[in-house]
Length: 180
Image (cartoon, rainbow, N blue to C red; front, side, top):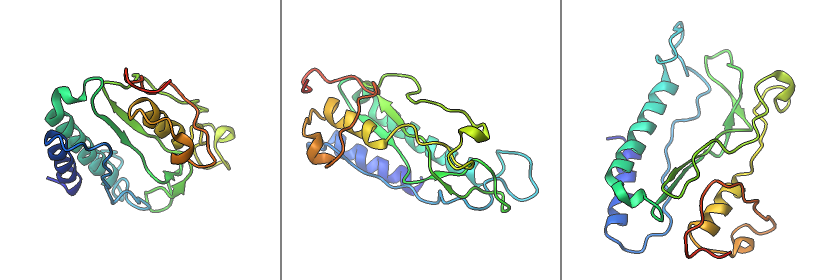
């Protein structure tokens, strides 16, 4: 029933209508959690805005996947979630976190190679970027480039990402009709 869930339902309708949809983008807001990721005075991590946001995110993606059913099977739909900014590791004075560098992407679908695809440096202060942020270990263009090539069968990566050559990280399997 959230705006994100309703937007995913509209994407699902387009997919089911078989109109030739190749890419859709859906935005979900309210993630700028500088304050009250956990409500003031609470020590319960399920009592705050971050838990609420993650629950709504999970519910909408779960509903979308259920709605898509076997359309998610290989060579079907690939879903990518990502953020344009990360969060700091340490909590600030407002029970939130400030903008940071590293974050994560989730990739769902039948063509996805299950697992965690990263070079995880850990959370020790010496491993943090600037002593405060998760280090960026994977360029998002590597993941998106691999999907463009292997799932959308588009080898023109230099046109999609001018000046950048995405590295293939083994996140997805190639469709049978994908270019070499």
